[in-house]
Image: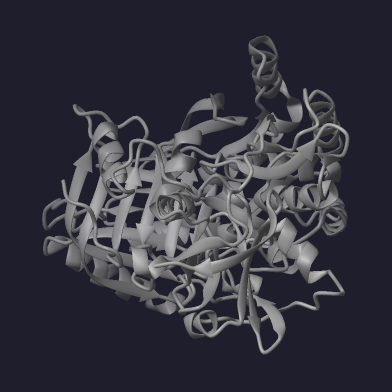
Length: 621
């Protein structure tokens, strides 16, 4: 099993229940080309071209934007969506174990996923705007324009770690039948953990499983069971679900043999990591000589993410939502070869399986400085008795699989502490910790942390200075340890230059460099290597050749009589002591981009951190 090369286009369609005896996950490799349709008038031609490629031995992956469905169903001002067929040389069906192994191989061969996650989450609407939109929806419902409207908005965020590692972490948190990890030709990625089937075809049998109705999971088993039972019997959720079932029955009847549309299961309750979901099943027999384009025209987009009636509700959605949905609430899946039914019957569209692209992230191409940004949509089905506050809470609940995912590290602060004086620069430490916790979505009780630190200082046995370390995990759990601070033996500390000792450059665009996290193996290796040379630290440089910081210190350089330190934009931690020195009016230090030449021509060097303060330094070989 080979790892994919960086920049290689591939598609993994991942079923959590795939087994060795029934391998239902699919790995598509050997990308050849793609067919893109952005004009509904070209739908038949593009689908025919993709089908011809499949008949010639290639394998097709399908990606359809919600807005392409708008264009199919009605005239729209936002007709900028696309339908894409990615064509590959190879499709391997894989068990879950083999998918696990392939993902690990492409994530530094690590058993545990490497560090990955999101930060700086920004919603396209706030709660007040959400509430205003729900008010407008209620007016439309009272006017009889719709019975149910699926209202959505976007979360935008910064991404750290690789898309493969991010998918592994989300997959571990939310195992689903319709997962997807897709590397697109333009370095954009799709990371999907969708639990919802849009439609699948096996032979002439069609099946769709609309998902409508949500309840939060509980950690207590009895309360969790009660939540599931409540959802199963809740009139509001059942009414919403049956509206969509009726809509899909109507859509399926457009391409089904007469009398074959059935509803074998209503109001099934399924468990997921953070929510219970209500799902129903609708089946039908596909009419002969129905093309894939015909299927899309009849069914796409899925009614569970529009509302009812479909066409009018989609018009209302376009008026209500401030940003396009893109792939979110569109479709992801595969298309296989067509069966030969004989000359009398003609060609039938091949088997296929499409998910509803919910719980789906689209990641932008990596920028020159290594940064990557992403987007995910969330939403709720609104009926006349929906309460805006409750629906907003439900949206946040649905996003928890992403926003509460463990990134694989902790935040920490290393502090100078004494029994009588407490923690030096405590407010600065807590301000930095609070900023990082907010950006990364870590739970944090700042007042509680302050109380714990005060108590820890009071419990120190002697007045000698201590090194106190606080760690915070994603859930908000705090651990504080302390030990007597060992004095340094030199007044002027030595410092190594990272490139001279085999250390890699840092990516200036890595957002985690602005936060003090336990993901710091290279930094820890740097100061430990320095200690073997009787030095204090190693200085690092970024991919632009700029000086950044030490493994455990910030650096100041004296040039032409003024102290300078690298700016945060170079990829620098906002150190507590760095902040103190920059705010010192007597020092009059400033920020500017610094290079190796600046370092070598400096009149003086200084390292600093909150534990040791400011330390005169010299470069050692």
